[in-house]
Length: 286
Ligand code: NAP
Image (cartoon, rainbow, N blue to C red; front, side, top):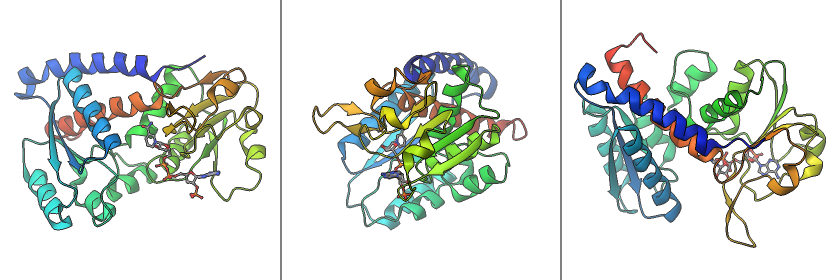
């Protein structure tokens, strides 16, 4: 079974659009997401465009603010401070990566926690690890949604996550743990990685290396979620961290690249923006 993040996200966005359509009547306005893009990196530009397009589908107001790559850190922090104070703004997202002269941790920390739609703010991260109410990071949240929509039972399963980044590997592992999976986190220093991955009933791969996971690393019937977004060095096409053609016959469920986790990430960004908006009107509701 191939899980289409594209189809699932289209369904969820349609549901959100129906909900948002009622907001002007109830709250007098729709949620407002501000996306800041620094520089003109083609991949970042395409991600930002995707976010604007999804906002349009869902009926969320989207403002994209473009700044040149040589903007100073102080100017960017000043811009964020202004948006934090702006009552008409519900969500703020700064597209990463940023130019080397700007500190990403400082920028992430500068965004008001209540407007942190990415779920990257240290207070949101801490709340996640302490099982407190928080904004969940979009990619891990999207992965859990995909698993559930595919009818994959997570509780009691052996899950292996390859990758331990703050934005994917670690929070995915935490969300799987919260769903009562038994989780192993593998990384670049893991000895004999195939022996670890072959134990996985659910394998989540977030490395950033094209077609790294081969069929011999996956057990029969495993559920395989491929987070990687890479360019195939031979064809130049988008591909994941998993050798899809080789692994698909062994897996019971697998997500493709493109059309898997990527669309779900944007879908969950829309959901997070709506949650941040609603929390301002009904603080106890979420
Ligand atoms: P990252 O910060 O570079 O982390 C990569 C992780 O992979 C690290 O923990 C690293 O281990 C591990 N790793 C690298 N080589 C390995 C190896 N040979 N064996 C085992 N582990 C290895 O990357 P990221 O931000 O988590 O992103 C991972 C991938 O997901 C990228 O392709 C990125 O583009 C993609 N991504 C997709 C979405 C989406 O929405 N679809 C969202 C975010 C990211 P160490 O910790 O030991 O260095």
